[in-house]
Image (cartoon, rainbow, N blue to C red; front, top):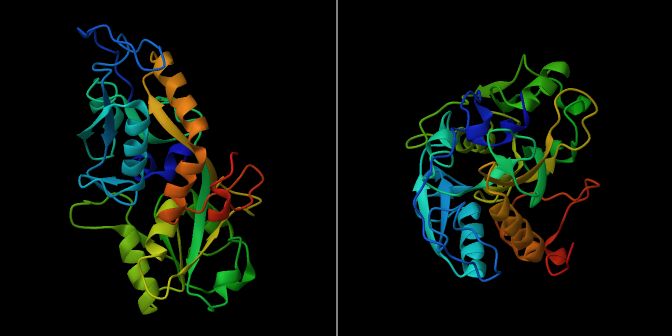
Amino acid sequence: MTNAACHRWLLISLVSIIATPIDCEVSRAQTPEGTDLSIELVDPRVLRVCADPRNLPFSNDKGEGFEDKLAELFAEKLHKKLDYTYFPQVTGFVRMTLAAHRCDVIMGLPQGDDLAQGTNPYYRTAYALVAKQGSGLDEVATLADGRLKGKRIGIVAGTPPATNMAAAGLMTSAKPYPLMIDTRVDSSAAAMIKDLMSGEIDAGVLWGPTAGYYAKQVSPPLHVTPLIKETSGSRLVYRIGMGVRPADQNWKRMLNRLIQENQPAINKILLDFGVPLLDDNDRPITAEMTTKQP
């Protein structure tokens, strides 16, 4: 499983390729910063975002996800209108959106994914263990912890931590949740949290942003522990940037600059959604740090 495994559309088998960029008739235009984007972008006056219409906490067609909020922030900073091209984030997402020039940026792309050109990362996070406060499992920081033996752990089938769970001997009693679902009517993460609250499972393993978001939706909130102490098996910590077309070098540089200049505001949006942020030394980034430059 590649780095792409940490986002739902990147969790499934990545068989799509970026199509050859098509020629487009565009008007010459200059951005406020003086960087010419008229060749790279169909309409330099508009921030055109590729997004999933039903994929909270990342995005939805009501603009309620944290990637939507980041897009709003960037549109404001760029003095651009904001527009979306919606497509389910499954196999073919990049080919049908970014590569087809229907939009110009994917707001979340794992570093190292080769379906699009990545910007500098704007956050770092990990898969996480979700458990009830005071359950004893809220102190577990690795899937190799003996306290998980014999427990029923929820896991989305085919995701990287499933490999680590198998190595730790946890799959026999695990409860799998489907990777490929119709998001119009179903959510594996929501189902896992419901089972955790009812006692059907003892803990669950989810991608960090999803874990943090759903853990805040219940009362009392669930405990989220990033799995940063794994010493074997699949890597569970990832850096996330944005995705652009390989030829869009000026656009990439502009996004890199926006990320650097607005990192505290970006962190605040992510933390508000419960995303467990990590610095390069695996230390948690807290709300108190959002006013400080990295």
